[in-house]
Image (cartoon, rainbow, N blue to C red; front, side, top):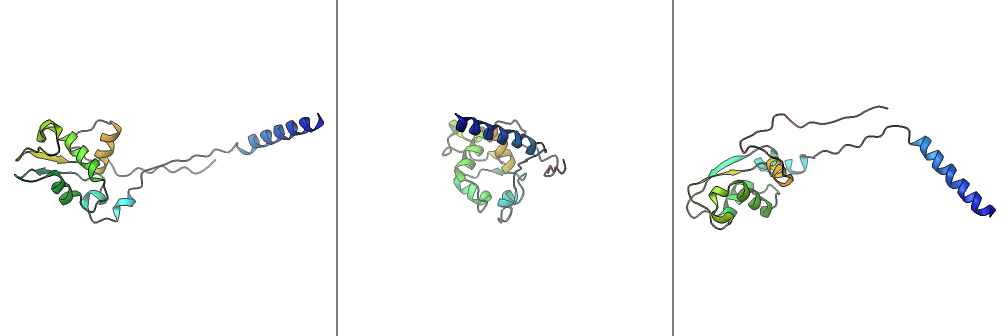
Length: 141
């Protein structure tokens, strides 16, 4: 019986001491690190807000367009295909990657636009970033 009471007392003292230690504020913030792709030799990787337009030539494939524009960017080509087809349904018959319409202009999205698309955030195709990267810093107590 004495052993159980001493274990309960030790537990209560430990809990009470932790309450005194955790009275200081502690803030953890996460942010996107744009430098992971910034070393690459590609406009899309260097600037996460960079986007462009492309006019489809006869006989051109989406994989060729992706290789020409997004090559060496480190981005997954399957995600790029899905993003381009979903943003440019007018240029693809039945949203099929293999049936592109020649002489149509397509929007090649930026990394930030692809992120917004994946998260379901509405955006305009021609919108540029309104401001630079916002960093949040917290010092103090």
